[in-house]
Image: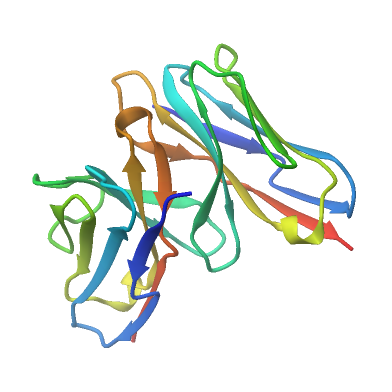
Length: 116
Length: 114
């Protein structure tokens, strides 16, 4: 299957700092990428849909100023958690769509953020 | 609003058993349905993708079926192995309005005992 790489796989930061997570599709171009958040023992919660060259579409209840998403190229989307607080600690996962609306989604390995 | 339900929430079986995981969805106007596997603390691995025009897909010991009209899909795992232990997630893409989003069920946690 196709490969989606996420970096870093884990990060620990102090409260108030900003953290950037990268999501790269390594062997295909992805016009659309998705960012999810997962709490322990729960399913994935969609945070936003990222389209290359345009502003991300955020789900209801997700603060766009807190979670900045940039999709500058067809192979890279970034999620920046700004002024992180302990409640932002979570597992963040990205996915990339290969082949448009009917295409298969491939997921990164996830990034575990711990805010002290 | 699309809703995806997976039954059972957890399943424990002895090694070698054949098993079926169930998934249902409320809006049948989907583009496709995908089954994933997630190991603890890891991302998702795509297992099978079924387009809306298809009725089933097979990969090795896995077979997934889709009955779009009734809003159901099943994942059949043959001759289960301890390495199959993981959480299995069903997700559908599309729905009325042509949404790109993938909507997930809550998953079935499978344990295969040696």
